Amino acid sequence: MVPKIRRGSRTHGLLVYLYGPGKRDEHIDPHLVGSWDDFAPDPGRDTSAHPDPKATLARLTAALDLRVKQAGDRAPAKHVWHCSVRTDPGDRMLTDAEWNTVARRLVAATGIAPAGDPDGCRWVAVRHADDHIHILATMVRGDLRRPRMNYDFKKAQAECRRIEKEWGLRRLNPGDGTGSKAPTSAERFKAERTGRPEPSRETLREAVRQSLAGAATEEEFFTRLREAGLRVKIRTAPSGDALGYNVALPGDRNRNGEPVWYPGSKLAPDLSLPKIRLRLADDTVDQTTPSATISSRPDRSPPARARRSAAGIAERAAVLLDGGDEAAAQLVGVGELLDAVAQTSPASTRAELAAAAREFERATRSHVRAERADTRAIRSAARGIIQAGSALGRGEDGGTTAMLVSTLVLVALAAARWHSARGHAQQAHAARQTAEHLRTAYRQAAATPMRALRDQGRALPEAVRRTHEATIHAALPEQGPRADGTTKTDALAATLAQAEQAGHAPETLLQRAIAMRELDTAEDVHDVLVWRLRRLAQLPAHPGEATPHPQASTRQSKTSTNDRISNRTAPTAAARPGSDPRTRPPRR
Image (tube, rainbow, N blue to C red; front, side, top):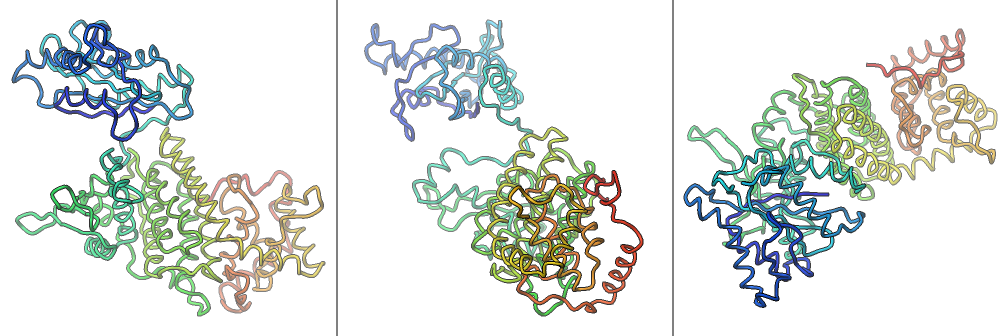
């Protein structure tokens, strides 16, 4: 049940609309379902004494405005309180009597007409559709004072949540005032008239978020806005310092032919210039591409290197999200990383990744604030992805996209747990929805490389394949053969074989991958481990690429030698009774 509150100054004009044919949805049988004294004239059905509905409507207007006229100059300029209340499409149809109860509870909860108060404001509830009503009240009490209506929207929301619970209706998540401003009805209607897929406000919000992703300076942010094709107007003080900014879509004009400008703070609470400055000042990103220091292999494209680097940084962000309130800052960095990936992703995954970034935007904001938190690494990873450019979705690019998205699924689920633990219902829901979009994008990105890996696993010599399957079963006992005798370990076995060829000890490397973080939330444990192993061992993300030479890195070679020695002298952790590596607490 969703209440929506507005304020106005024309009682008669609003009544004309409520009892009229409607501008968007057809108004069917408009009539009163409740009023302040249950004796208000009804222009929809009181036709016996006054056959002209216009005369009855004028009587109703006069009755509602009586106290406003008596108050004179003391009445508020916008004296009309208008609240529409809509049920969910899946809810049962409420009767007129039930809608009357809803209206009475809302005007009492918001202070319009408290229960038992003879001087409450005058109000009516009009129903002209099955699924919603409109409550109109005039904000002058019987004693000619204004009603106490602080936080009326929050109070209306809370009362709707109680009604949903009591009446068995769909229960919506309570808000906390940190969400973005929703498009108005006028903005939605304008988008439909002009053929835009969405209101300008939503298009601008996404464009501003993407321009901010990984930006190192305020000037770079404004430059990106202009490069995205937006009109930008910077508000300056007499000293010349920027105070704020407004953006507009080219071609989006009002009735006077002027651009429709939106200040950043009206797009989202964290997109105002002061909030953006705090983000840039607290965590100045490394202006070099971080992925360049991770791997300079000539057979890896810049987009592939940037995604491989970001996967490791995202894994660390997921670990931090298992911590306390200081992890709040990591959510902002993850949001920037998703925005960066979405705007540079291959065409096959772009739509789902863009949807994931949009959903996660809600999960980045809550009332929890970290006093100081270093998010330079994750913001630099977002910057590296932007600077590296768009991935083609083939070969190593496609494999590293799957590698990164697989990690981001677990990050989104960690964010959902973090919010749930703090009672942030809307943010937790948004994070879970993000994970679903990411899972769809992952299946699209991973289809080709995982198919190739499974083929390579099935092509391994029988003795080699059985050896690696035994290693997998020792580490993950519950991931054994299925009822039909087949296994899902082909890709994982192929990866272990390639890691061994590159000089790593398969058993130790697999234990490292398992211990990095929990696997209970993984949709497919094997897929998650494949990408962790390939990143840890610096194997190509796409199996068609060349495997690194065993002596490609002196440090890697020394580590691998020590791993092999330790494996000869001690059993693996998973082989010891009562030592399941998946139950270990994540490393911090």
